[in-house]
Amino acid sequence: MMMMGLAWIMCHEEVRAVCKKKCGFLIMVSKVGGDVLMNNLSESFNSSILIARDKPIITMMEWIRSYIMGRFASLRHKCSLYTANVMPKPQKRLDKEIEKSANWIPVWAGGQSLK
Image (cartoon, rainbow, N blue to C red; front, top):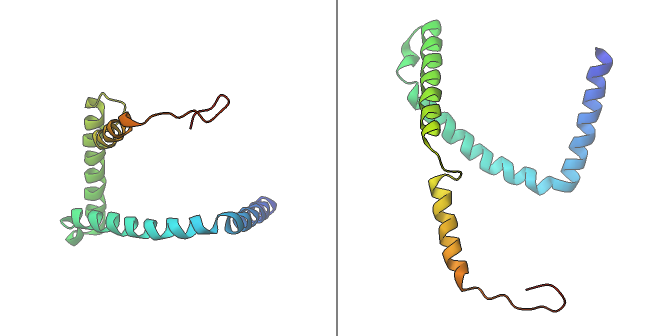
């Protein structure tokens, strides 16, 4: 068991070194957006459980469990009613881009490629 843990740590350190060397800027960018997103999600969740926060711990946990299960059930129901492949907002953006690209003219770049 100890050897497996040590091997995992060595592998993790190796991957971490490669990631820092090759993709350091991506790690920095993901942390910035991730922190803001996580803060917004936390605040939203905390405001939704405000009702249960003054209850005893077991009652509060049961309330949170039932709240989350109800939320997942309602979202699953909404998703099952939606029949298209793409959600409405991305579809609207895609339609706008398709309209804009209608005036593009392909130009021959020589050989068998277009520019």
